[in-house]
Amino acid sequence: MRIVALTFHDLIASAQTASPGDEFYNLTAEEMETLLSQLRKGGYKTVHSKAFRAWQQGEGSLPERTVVFTFDDGYTSHLDIAASLLKRHRFTGTFFITTDFVGQPGYLTWDQIRQLVFLGMEIGSHGKTHTLLTKLSREALHEELAGSKQLLEAQVGVPVEAFAAPGGFWNGQVARAVQAAGYQAMWVSDIGTNGRDTNPYALRRVVVRRPFSLERVVSMVEGWQPAFWWAASQQRLIKLLKRVLGVYWYERLKRRLVPNA
Ligand SMILES: [Zn+2]
Image 1 (cartoon, rainbow, N blue to C red):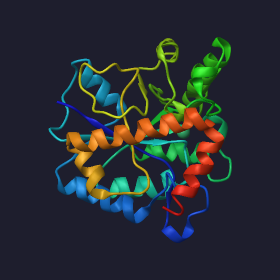
Image 2 (image 1 turned 60 degrees about the vertical axis):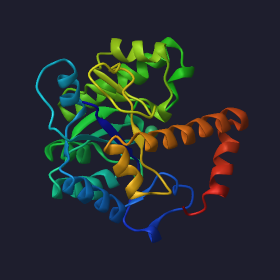
Image 3 (image 1 turned 90 degrees about the vertical axis):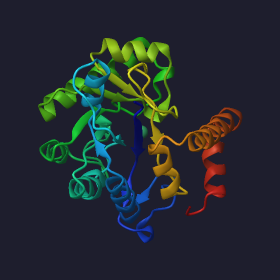
Image 4 (image 1 turned 45 degrees about the vertical axis):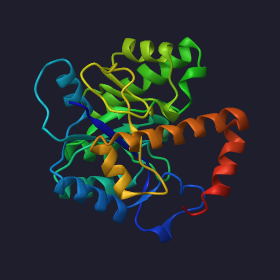
């Protein structure tokens, strides 16, 4: 059995309300709704990161058609839009919070994060400052991992067992530090499916982004291999461009290539 995890970022009410610069990762509420109803019709059920890890460890079973939904960065839209759409379809998700962003404009407050828990969602950590972890000293890494975990647990009152790597950047040292900080899982952005044998500190996710294609996302959830090859080659190209151009010029190029996409 192989499980696909999808990653979402900010959600917007409609295409008209998009602000320039955000267009690459934002899905509209309508697109999200279409995706969720398609997956529900396809007989899919969702589980939290926690239940997925339990299954990996041989405890408990997963529904025959399982998909994992993850949400990064802790946007206000995760409560306003995502949570209500998920509830409508009896779906659930794991929401990764960057603790320094909490309460900033456009981001969830502690109260709203507690509401997500009340609605049956799982809360994970996405670090303290959203710094890329591969470049940090041991002390700074500890603060990002253990510091954010402690704060989330103190504020929300539930164990925080899942971590998502900011920007998808990780290496062996990061994975070991995540484990040492007490997390049971690290979700990255490497494209692929997850089985019992997948390293729990390098769990793969598919980032849903623009240009959005319902067929493509659904075919990946269904495990259709060519869709993964396509996405993996696109991701390799992005990584190469980032390395060659540097992140700043890569971002500029991306915005020229995908205007309002
Ligand atoms: Zn992020």
